[in-house]
Length: 92
Image 1 (cartoon, rainbow, N blue to C red):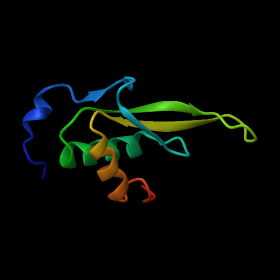
Image 2 (cartoon, rainbow, N blue to C red):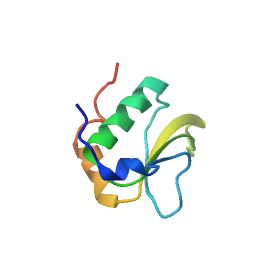
Image 3 (spheres, one colour):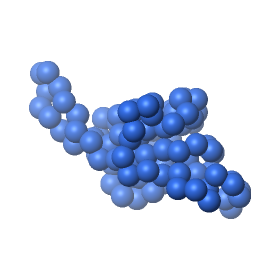
Image 4 (cartoon, rainbow, N blue to C red):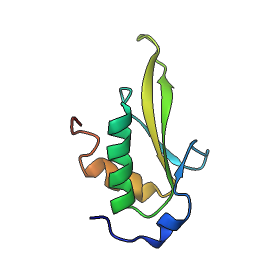
């Protein structure tokens, strides 16, 4: 069950990553249910604004490919998200 977070009454999930957000790019393109699972985890465990967007990963020797990027307004929340293992788990 999700705890009531007063910050949830404002729009916390943005549709773009502002330049002052701390950004993390995954190596792959996540499907919608994976993005929803990540957003739910963020809503339950973090308090700041965030964004999960489709992005492009450029490489010098590797071809360009689709990826998913996650941005957090609070840098510490990105650290918490990464250390939680949500990124490393294979979501099904």
